[in-house]
Image (cartoon, rainbow, N blue to C red; front, side):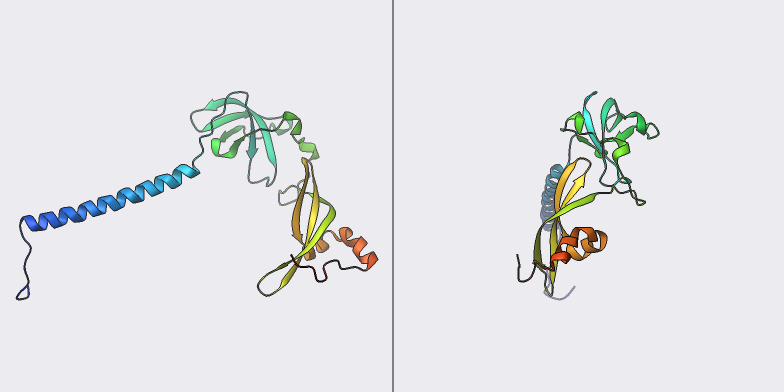
Length: 190
């Protein structure tokens, strides 16, 4: 101890320590409330009744959604599903995190024989037509994009795709442009 320094003893040190403990408790309470708020936003409390139609999305079949009826609830977090006969070999009990409430009609179920799967276990989708074109400006270059209309087994959808990738995979979509000798993207930036 240096000359002139005052040593804190007795009730003063207890009071300072108690103040610091109170500050730490308050900081922990604020952090706990922040974490609880975040967790509450992400939490889903899905519960299904016997007979409910549910959607099942399983990662090995990317993009393929299966439908099934709830046969019974197994404890709090799992459900046993009824599958069509062609899926007899698949285990039919799933954790609630794999299930979503099905709001679609039963007529929208895709028969398994209509689904085409590639070797990487992804559903094969076919482009129908090019509906639009635009260029997207990145920091140092421009990218040509095409609006593709896709044919799915469960309807149709539109997505913007890179023109060079689409020309490589589906050159038949671009035959009309080559015949006419046109490049509709010249000067067009959106």
